[in-house]
Image 1 (cartoon, helix red, strand yellow):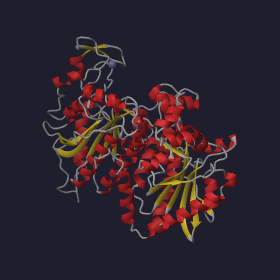
Image 2 (cartoon, chains in turn blue, red; image 1 turned 90 degrees about the vertical axis):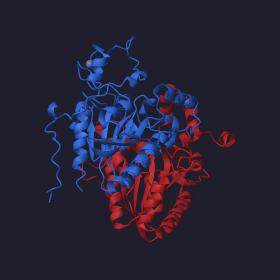
Image 3 (spheres, protein in one colour; image 1 turned 30 degrees about the vertical axis):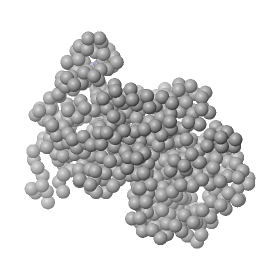
Image 4 (spheres, chains in turn cyan, red; image 1 turned 120 degrees about the vertical axis):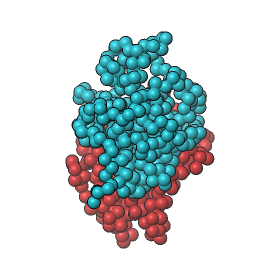
Length: 302
Length: 273
Ligand SMILES: [Zn+2]
């Protein structure tokens, strides 16, 4: 039945640690000079060195870049902005952005929120906390959304919910898979109940995408919490996570207050979620492109 | 608007009313509104969450599926009911019963009354986020009419997980919010004492949410709801439920699905759709 349908062009990843020789060619990260304005607060003046917030070693920025923005010493996955992620993942020049201009407003007229949005836009060069569009990954076409840890903690307000919903609806109409890199502190509190409703709006769009027989892969990156965990993050046909990512519904501090006791070792880490059955694979950054490429191809059989 | 809340009652007054002990709970409404209720229990995966009750009930010579978040009154009862804070097995039980309703063509009536989904180690281990997400996703596929009524507190994703309905109504003194006013003040102002101010700015009252298009109907409470004197209120809600069922009788499953989809699809950036 599968004769002629099974394209034998990919090397299937064997185990958790499939060899680096399975790398795609051309997958070397773009060292992206444009990245200059996205400086981390922890950066040491001069921009050449950075201290790892996990192992505390002093690192060359260049070494970090060449190591897929992970610590060369301890392997910590540093948070990265959407455009760096898109460059690392997609076939060169294939990304076409959707709804670039779509911006939220201030439904509660919450004091200081307009100003915060404005200054965040200037600092990050992003309009909102998610970039959406279409790309190809190892030759397979897909809709792709990437959330930004820098934009009000990647929180989901009406604009984020609307951009993701439009992406999913368009993917359904164009019969494209959806890959969504989640990274969020949860619902955007400054937009109150309107943020909460985005959980339902995005989930119902994914339901229709699912019913159309299309693939959805969610990739959980550090951090994925709250209302994003309780909606599209947990709805993937396949759920991937980056090593060490914080993933959970309730905040650890809230839980500690509720139960009044210490939390278990590694609580709410990607590894903890995998152990409890909520993550298919933990994927190192340099393997992400191959893994997604295989998934896209394996689900395009019909 | 400002003047009205000043004169009548502040939002913070309403928050406290919504949490009052004498306020009727889901089981009180179920007993008063429906002709019999047969509880069905368990999620078939892990256990039976007592913070939520569900089953088959009769109303107006037909069967419906009724599910309600259930608070307790005494300390003992609240321990048993976990203060109406559901765990993953509760959301999975509710979903099982909703899918059963879908299979047999029974409309679904939901009563929302929770401070929020339970925050704890066991809930996280069993996938609280996944359980809520799954409900949002699967409720979008129900082919029967779904009505959700917020009777007390509609706390965050824990409430929304029973709120993907064709219509959502709120009792006049109930609240529906992304987070408690206490949590909101603590997170955004680092000052848990500014709860009254938080309650005002958050738009959490039935009137405000009806005006904003988040809910369809406000159920009036001439007197703040009291379980000792709730016959008129229950009678009014019963009649409204019967009207709701009548309205959806004429619709095909596809129309019901599409109407629910459009209801949430509209909740976008103003002017963007
Ligand atoms: Zn390190």
